[in-house]
Image (cartoon, rainbow, N blue to C red; front, side):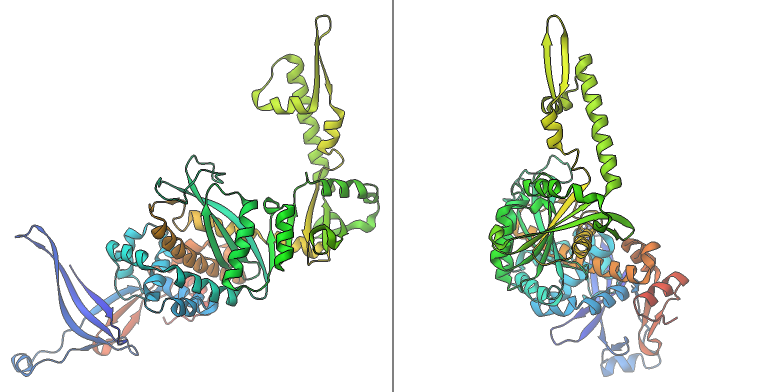
Length: 519
């Protein structure tokens, strides 16, 4: 089997070789031989044939030069080129990895399009149009991952962060990635978000709320919890020289120490508060009577909410903050009914003697059980515990913000952080990160960076789909698969480049990405 291999040299020129694979009977193994064809004309895509000697010309004067043909799948690369242009990722990567950027970009595109282990990347790169004009064997990929420097990665984060995160709210969250390795010092047992009994590493990621693009990440041992990880993450931002942006986080990161740390470091923040927090309970009790007044209600994107804002003095956390309180009356009623149903069921279980093991904690908390020889078992409610559970506090949730004065705007900002969940879902389910198979931390770090580049590309495609309305018809993977049949046939000599005919769906996709069909 023969194919055309394009190889780019340090002088910037691309050279073409005809590579033929054959079976060596003597050595009993596959081998290959190659023949130099000439240099690729970057302007026309044609191969300029090598100069033949006078003897060759004389012996074959009547024969015309052979026509060589290369077929490449170009559909996915057209979309990814447009995304790179739109986000500026290629220029930042080239600046940070001047010698390796083509390989890194090509491998990240393979992950974006296929989401399969890197060991299968070689054949995909040979058949698809990519920044790297040749394949990468498994050995070459391992060598690439081994020589990637942490300094270059951090340089990328610094420049990328300046480009993406300078003028918008940034959402921060943590996910866990399971690992099969017992030799990786970062793989530890902890709160596994996928419910798996495997060691894990934790990934803290920062995402642009409006851009929908990942900005940076930090990996740390799987046994470290979310609350304690935040303060070291803030120090990581300082080292990268990030501006004092607006952080948006869920209530899992809430603690007095974290709030004080963000205030001290100069970061604005909007963070969810646990309903069990005494400050939230006290505020709910304070506004209970005012909920009967219609002035406190707002229509937020079709949802009727009671809203209340309480200003906290600077002495509380070192900076003036606002506690925004919300209540959905409909959900509150459902929550109260559900809790009452649970209470009645638990009481019946106690009285009948049919106790359920998983409910023992509820029996102990919400009931007083007395047993006498004459009257038998008598079960009564623990009124204080039921009240503490918050029958009057059902349906409330709270947000603490050091920047947003308006409760409705604070809620809108907080809800837009769902971009984080979408990116984590992409990372695990589409980009081959459900499990880590690397044993060493060095290889793991390099692989994580490749996944991060791929996540930028995936997020960039999703943004285009959302803006054009195509997200209602396609997922990111479906749209890349749709473009797989768009190929280019590259002839030598006068034939040039011929692109296959585009389908109606492909023309619609190309138009959404600001591209024009050539057929």
